[in-house]
Length: 428
Ligand code: NDP
Ligand code: PMR
View 1 (cartoon, protein in one colour):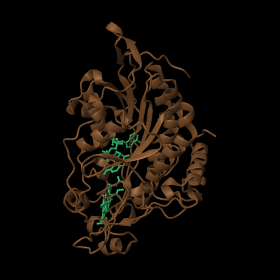
View 2 (cartoon, helix red, strand yellow):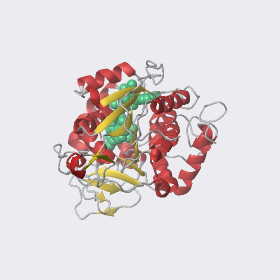
View 3 (cartoon, helix red, strand yellow):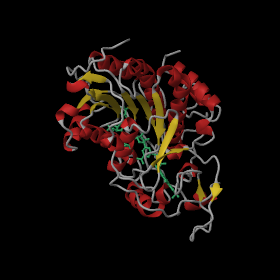
View 4 (cartoon, helix red, strand yellow):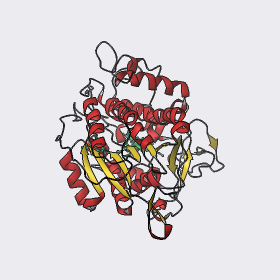
């Protein structure tokens, strides 16, 4: 479906109200420190870099794109033949809190973006936008519940009815159920974490690719938020200095000085999609498994698996569509935003200790504001147009292309994931 390329500011807000999905279940598991026994952690097969010290994040780093003037424009005529770039339209899923809200705010503040906040709780999103100080004319809230494929399809219809072109799609929303003893399910019967984080976004992104293709904006992007916890190290180059506490040589990735983004993916339970037999069985627990690899339900692993799916999906999009469409496909690890609602289902002790642990021990902590600037950079920075990239930031808040783990960059797995996901969401 082609859509008018001019920016139509009439907008039909759709309010379906909050859904009943995504709520916690079950009681809390017994927790050791931060939910993982340290001895178990230290036994796992990583070269320790956790305690490697590095400079704190430079929180003052801004969005480079805000000041950049080099972006070639979709041109609307201006006096004296000057070309100006029209406001971009960006959909951000899960923009009612945490990273999504911070990104929406950062983009709105540039004055160059109209943010469509795609949220399951309309009222919460409106309140969040207001209290973040976002100007009324810089955003709209549209209802989207990723735990329902019908809602995803309805969202696409509503968005198209708005007449707005789509320039960037950010798949950001996620749920995490680390303490759940039993799985919960989406409206379509998929285990909730993979259902929301991967399958809902998969359908959304597949549908909206048409709209991205139709946009006349010069830098069209499809961004799927990934995470470090879904990636284990591919290779490790020990640096010279051993850490004074662990005596272990820290591992650094080539071109990523100070990068500690390798340990977190090795904290049990580790992501592992196996041969995808659970996904092939529908993830519904009806005779099959609720886990992608066919194993026993584990809420923390389900989340990490879903993040691997996010990163594989981004790469498969890139392989299939980048050349043909010119759309940039990207993923990222924004840093450890230990204060967000993502951890709302975790035990109280975890929520108390996690932020200082990340701030002072791992130094992987990043504020919501800083993380929002990072994602906003991936949305609009003219220097981040490379497709197929998994962006990360070093301790000076400079972006670099990170490497993905073997599993998260396996093209055969990505293809199989794509095909199975297509079937589950009704595209094949
Ligand atoms: P939050 O819980 O603060 O934000 C998640 C957002 O997703 C919320 O707006 C939530 O809506 C929304 N959401 C949840 N379920 C649905 C659904 N069914 N339909 C639509 N929206 C839904 O967490 P974060 O900001 O931390 O997470 C954002 C992204 O960042 C995720 O992809 C996460 O994996 C990633 N990430 C986070 C890290 C961290 O340290 N926090 C680290 C690495 C990656 P509501 O407000 O209604 O609950
Ligand atoms: Mg992890 C450099 C070390 C590092 C980093 C960057 C993270 C990020 N974590 C690190 C180390 C450790 N963590 C260590 C040594 C432990 C054992 C004490 C540890 C534990 C831990 C737990 C229990 N970490 C966690 C949890 C969670 O429940 C979080 C999670 O996995 O959510 C899925 C988490 C995280 N650690 C991170 C990041 C970014 C998270 C949030 C994960 C995400 O959204 O992917």
